[in-house]
Image: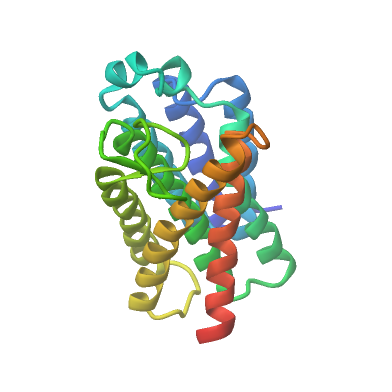
Length: 245
């Protein structure tokens, strides 16, 4: 069977992702396998532009992890192994986008799918930047009761982290709008931009609430919190399409 141009681009991006992640140490072996699975699912059942957005998140997230890493390590709030991600992290941040891609293929490319995938990635980007950049801000308060908590506390929110979260949503929104013309998406670009930005930021707050209420009590782990937060982003995008578009 002859591959289409989109399929060839998809496979090329997956190969490039594997090479980049392996060479830069962004993913370990299990992470590479999971990334290949997610990448092929997202790009072949969705569109290669979805994978391009995911790759931007992976690169920016890895850079944010390395930002002032020694300071975060001294406070014991840094990612282990210089931020090298495993399969749990990949699935926590990209699993929802892959699931949206499966539904997209099964339902014949519904209009909301692109926005839902981009929104889920925006949540992941917002949360990652908020955590990695905001974790060193001493002006941290609990999202539940606004009491002062140590920097890096699950469910903590800070001034710097809040703006970093917004920057993460904006970054993915810019990518989504830039690549939208390559797909069959007809959602107005301004609407797409606003939705992805706002949902990215809101999803980050969902992550903080889940972290404060459940992760701090040991009821669920960090990766489960991340997955549920990205899922909330996809659901918010779908509801917005059904309700307002």
